[in-house]
Length: 246
Image 1 (cartoon, rainbow, N blue to C red):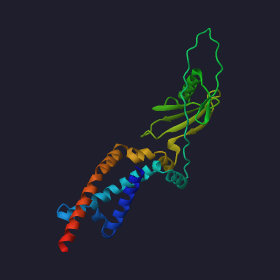
Image 2 (cartoon, rainbow, N blue to C red; image 1 turned 45 degrees about the vertical axis):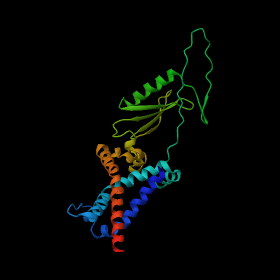
Image 3 (cartoon, rainbow, N blue to C red; image 1 turned 90 degrees about the vertical axis):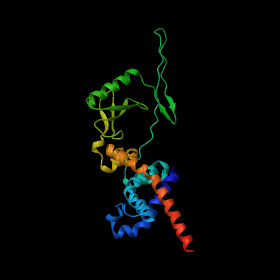
Image 4 (spheres, helix red, strand yellow; image 1 turned 180 degrees about the vertical axis):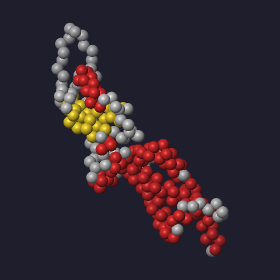
């Protein structure tokens, strides 16, 4: 997949290089389809004009695709933008067994989750955390995700309020004992660069710009076979023309 993305970037920039004289001469003309032309000229116009329209979409899809493909690209993008790279969270769902009144409660010991120690949490603490979150946020959210604490009584909630896509998330941390908020990162308070870096997947699919963006990205992707077909036809016609001259 990563090699395919790099190949697409090579094809895009080589296409821009080949058609650059025409683009430089008349940019607006390079965007127009000429249905009056025929044969090889029509194919060349179809190939270049539609290519000019879809290049921005392919460029966004390719660069965001490289974000997951290569670690060096991922790190470089975070360095350039100055946005902190999100840390991978290790979460574990703990299950409690039903105990009879005659049984002596066992001591709760911390469990290993990957390389981190995760303490068992009680149902009462989880209920308290949820109730506290609902009170602090005044129930103004669409969805929320609870992250169990590795230790202590500080719980983390990731929630979506009135955001237009799933990556417009807010994060809140608070102590269930004191009800004190230790951290509250709101999506709306972030800079444009931080919002974009936190929405790589939505940019990749076009969902960041709503239904219109998603539809345009879909149509641009649907056009991909057109360039292979017209490019091959142009190559065949060019080869035949050379053979006739020889």
